[in-house]
Every structure is written in C-alpha cells, then in structure tokens.
Image (cartoon, rainbow over all chains, first blue to last red; front, side):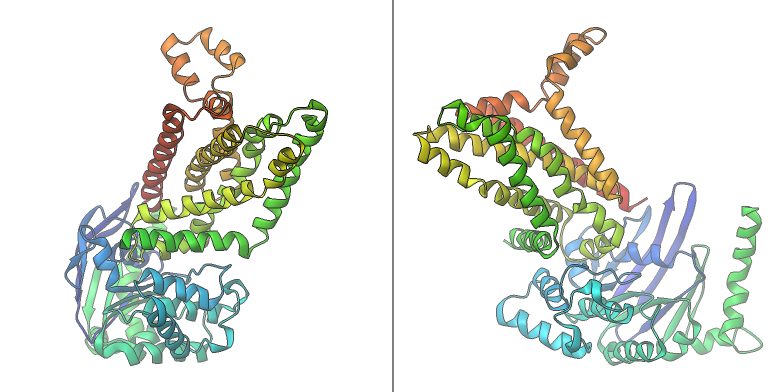
Amino acid sequence: MLECKNLEKRFGSIHAVRGISFKVEEGEILGFLGPNGAGKSTTMRMITGFIPPNGGTASICGHDILRQPVQAKTCLGYLPENAPVYAEMTVTNFLKFVAGIRGYRGAALTDLVESTIEKCHLQKVRRQMVETLSKGYKQRVCFAQAVLHDPPVLVMDEPTDGLDPNQKHTVRTMIKEMASKKAIIISTHILEEVDAVCSRAIIISDGKVVANGTPAELKAKSPSGRLEDVFRELTIGSEEVLTRAHR
Amino acid sequence: MQFTRNMLRIMKRELASYFESPVAYVFLVVFLMLLGFFTFSVSNYYEAGQADLRGFFFWHPWVYLLLVPAASMRLWAEERKSGTVELLLTLPVTMTQAIVGKFLAAWLFLTIALALTFPVVLTTMYLGNPDMGVVWGGYIGCILLAGTYLSVGMLASALTRNQVISFVLSLIGCLFLVLAGWPPVTRMLTEWAPDWLVTGVASFSVMPHFESIQRGVLDLRDVGYYLSMIVVMLFATHLTIDNRKSS
C-alpha cells in the first residue's frame, strides 16, 4: 500500500535523510521511531508530497507521489506535526472544506462530516472556532480531517504529542479500530506508544534506518529485553557524535 | 472540471476567512473613508462643477498602495507561520489551484470593496450627466490595477512568514510600479544607465496604462499589460513556494 524507495533529502549542507526504504501493508501499524532531529518529519513530508526528495521516491496505493501527486494524495490521510488547522474556521466548516476538496458534495458531504464529527467525539465543539479550542481538541480536529474520507493509507506525525493520558488513550483506540483495513504510519518518540499500538517499528537515526521489526523482535536485540535500551543503544551514538561536532 | 471546482473551494474558504475576522470590516471602512476624504475634500469634487469621477479615480493608485498590501500580506505568510500550508498542499490539490484560488479570493474581496463606492457614482448621476463609458472604464482600470498590486503582494507574502515584512515588501514593489515611469526616476536613471534600461524600467509603470483606461479607452495593450503582470507574479509565487517548502 505504501512504499518508500531510497528517500534522500539535503537541506544545504545538512544531509537530513540518507536513503530510507520501507513498505507498509494493509492491516499494519508501523511505528516510526527516532530521536528528535533524526529525520522523521522530513521523511513523512516527502511521503505525503509536501516536500520533494533529492533522491528516491514514495508510492501510495501504486501512485508515485512525484509523478501522480494528486492521485496519490487522494489515497492518503495526513496528520502533520503540531496538527495545523485554519484558526478562523469553525470545526464543522473546516471539515466541510476538506470534504469538498476530497470530492464530496451535497448530502454525501453533510453525512460524511456528521459521522466524522461523531466518530471523533467533536459534537461539543462543532460550532466553535478552531482558535478557541484546547490542544487536545485541535489535535482531534486535525485527526478528523485525516480520516474523514476513510483513506487506505494514513500518515500521522506525532498524533499523541501534547495530549493528556485520557486523550492519548482515545486517539490510540481510534487508530487501532481503523487498523484492519489500512496501512498506517505513526511517528513518535514515546516508546510506550509502540507497545500500545504498533504491529511493527522502524528506528531511524541520523537519517538512516537502524532497525526494522516487530516490537518483540526489537526488544530481543537487547539483553534487558526493554525497548528503551535498544532505542538508546541504536541512536545514542549519533547524538554523541553530533554534540561533539557542535563543540 | 475538478480543477475549477477545487480552485473555487479554496477561493471560497479564503474569501470567508476575510469576513470571519475583523480584517474585512476594518479594511472596508478605512478604504471607503480614505477614498471619500480624497474625493470630496482634497479633489474638491463639489467645487469643480463637473459631473465626472476624475477626482475620484485619481487617488486609487495611491490608496491601493497602502491597502492592497494589507489585504495580501497574510495570504501565504500566515499559512506558513501556522503550518496550515502543509495541510493544504497535502490535500489532493495542485499548487496552481491553491495559488489561483487564493488570488481570486483576494481579488474578489477588493472588487467588493470597490463596488461599495457606488454612492459616489449615484451622487454624480444625481448632480449631472456623467459619461458612463468613462465611469465603467475607470472601474475596470481600478479592478485591473488592484489585481496587479495584489499579485505583487502575493509574491511578497510567499517570500516570508512574517506579515510585517510581507506588507513592507509588497508596498515597495507596488511603489516601484507606480514610480517607474515618473520623470524624476527616469531622469535619475538616464544619468548613468543605457537607454534600453531606462525604457525597460519605465515600461513596468502602471500609471500610463491606468491613465489611458481612465479616459474610457479600453486598449487591449493596457489590459494585456495588467494580465501579463499578474501571470508573471503568480508564476513567481509558484516558484517561490516550491523553493521555500523544500529548504
């Protein structure tokens, strides 16, 4: 459903992503792990067609994101980092706008927006302007626009960042409920999330994939059997090198 | 078909966003008060004893100089600052749809502002018998002028995520368009620059085109000047956004 082939990105002299390749199939929830600055968001932005890669490409449901961007984006739901939403719109109007762009019209559009509002528990705030919402609600509104059209591929950049434990639980439950028919990627640096929702995880460090496997396989890499230790072992080296370079 | 539909959806959202914030109302009040003040108090509309709108249209290039950048400064700067640009451009829309949709929304907004000056026309018709061809010509000239300033403002807005910088850049860009053919400027250039450069710079000026449409002569060359300026500026906006989001 989703495939990245050798994605590369340079920002001036910084080589942010150095040849990342992986596949996500239907029914899988892939955890995309890595320390801050490892290239998670950059990779997701390339997969979703927001920034062009310097090399390699990604395809969504068989549509190449560089050659058929509109078709690829049609099959995609994307929750960007920090959940940006138009501040001056009401929740309902915002979702109607997105549904319209997604090609829905008339009664189908209204029904879809209604059912999405219900599914994402937004009834209480539906007439409120987005700028007056709390962070948790904003995150859920952006989540709602990502799943509105029931996309086969869902990309979420830190979907639970800044949420309280109850909200985290709600979001994770919603993700798990949808998982069987979709290919989902979630980036995170919260390791408990991997155990809670992911069926497979990739760890990236310094723009490269350093591990790829089920949570159990990854844990087996460390004598302690804890994901945290594996993560530290695989990614700390790069950070030390970086701090030394900065000095 | 889908191309136009999505473009119109983006336009509708953008136009609504003017009216959902106080921006539109502040803008309209200031716009109408400034034009009223210049027409009636500075140009001595009543004392002139002529039923025409020359004194009214004369001020438009100057009033727009201040107000059009105010209407255009947020178009891309705000999207980039709040991160919603990532949301917009990962929906199944092309960059051209987004740019043209936003441009048309702002242009329509300025046209609405201009349409609200109708009492000036009614007053003139009550007082005498103005040449309506000249009046319509004046309005068409103003709409085209507003579109040209707006396209400059849109480019300025794509260059930065800071709205103040966006405002100042577009003010300077539009000021250049007004002053390019002005004798003090061309004289300054003739002292050192070759002739082709002087005529080249002078040919960018909006004023000769604005004045000829003011006389009620709708020459295709003048219309062509405005439209080609708009197309070039929107194309430059396209390149700028492409460039900005990948670096």
